[in-house]
Length: 463
Image (cartoon, rainbow, N blue to C red; front, side, top):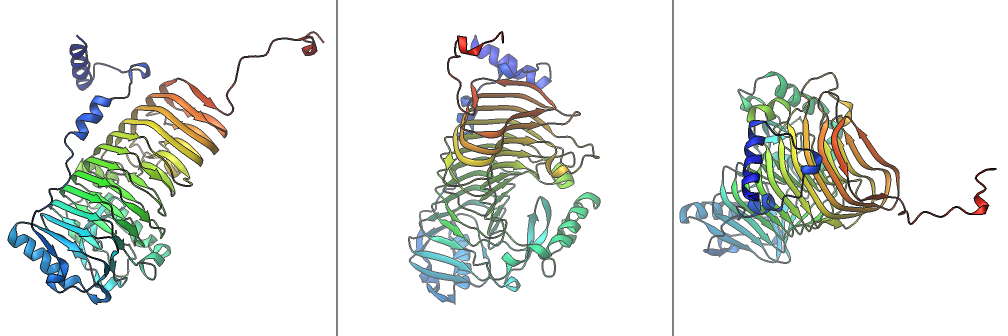
């Protein structure tokens, strides 16, 4: 009977006939488990070869890129290759462009170090802050591939300190030009959106675009030119046990964008921006593609950096079915969980589940806003934010606000449950505006209150 009721409820939801109230929401472990059941990551090829066979030298000086290119061609010819990269510094005088059925294993003590020379990175089909365009190749780039893995205990060093990391103050004109193209050219000719030299738009360290079957495991990531790991329009991905010491400008840790069926687990973050930022395209490009980021499980991660988990602000294609479980902090985070959008974005955030997450000191703990950066308030692409369930979220000290929900009058934040919330201290405990159907269970912000005292003669209530 319970199964029948669930089926009827699901059918009514699909037809728009049933309105869930906050009291009906629960932590949907069945949905989480169904997501996990389809995530396998990459198939690792059985055929193994040492990169030195192709002429590479791990002396930190010799250019190893020709050897890796030969290895990619060999993988194509033989139907896959597991490439072993041993101890040493393997210098790449340009990008590493991947192929199908490839596994690169960086042994402990191996460093894959890239040139910081922008002239060595040709223009490729990519995306920049949610707008599709041509720009410098990401340092490790894969497009339209299947079964790609980068594993091991070694290090990927973007080595971007002297060039790309200095560009942010010069990027604004090109950044705004890319957004104008997004809004006005109809998206009919992405190839005409050409940036690169003179534009100062930094490339990502690792980007997998339209790939399926991906495993990134174990490696350490340092000195990225921009975002560290960008998963764009990709599917069936495992990110496990990665380690970060990436503190250059805008070194986001992992950015799933318009991607689905992703497991992110046991990551040690220490990066110079968002740890995980879930996106789905900006404005017109996001609406046209209609590719949400969905079915993402984040668990047992150790957060340190700017924000722990962010949704937005480039989320015009929608975001749904996000689980954040059993995570804690390795150091300071400005915000814990942060959902940010505005009336320029549109899109939706549906089914966000948070359970058993702990933070130390933050500025804001759980912050949902439909008014991000105060932008788009004269626009009419209001985002739908609904179906949030937060259980067992704790923090020692919140400098500003513990729980924030900011909807708009046109599209309130709806159907939210908070339960078992514990915050040691906060300047503002709760700030909910333009919301509907919000439920608070056990919630303690500040010192817990014990049994009330009894009236005594010293109270002198009739004085």
